[in-house]
Amino acid sequence: TNFAAAYQIRSTRLLFQLGTQTFGATSVAYAAGTNAATAPVAPAAVWTNGATAGGAYTAGMMFGATHNMGALTLKASYGTAAMSGGQATASTARAVANIESGAKSTQMALGAVYDLSKRTAMYGTMSRLSTKGQNTVASMGLASAAASTTGASNTANGIDLGLRHRF
Image (cartoon, rainbow, N blue to C red; front, top):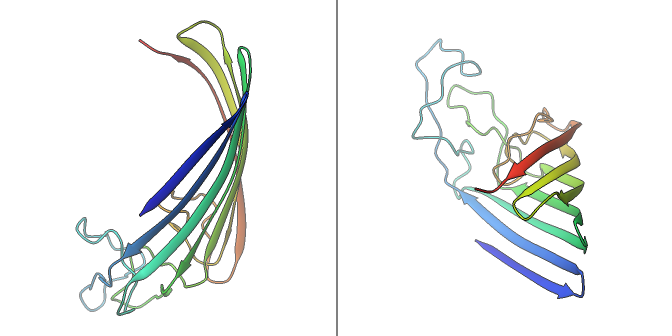
């Protein structure tokens, strides 16, 4: 479920998004002696949370803004997502997503787009993703290079540079 809103104030647009995602209580069982940590994942069981009966729940929000200054548009955003109801497990009925309850991801980004013409633009974005707890997918579907182990915290930084042309 998602709710999003935007509000324009002259050259500035303010953005807000609130979202939730619920995962079922499915887990993948392996034969005795199988190393569950390295075994291939069944395609039909992508989202799981071990033995938690009611399923896991992710709630997230994002605030953002864009400011247009002629050919240059500046962008900024802050988003967070937190998991509840999940459980980290290392059993043979391992949870594929392997997310612990209380896992949290936070992402901040700053960027700019410079229009070279009506259809061509240069763009760049700098981003920092911080994770706390075992939460490979706690950022509402975004896999993270900063995935943490149980209770740990990690960060990952990224830079996105490019040239866009609309045909």
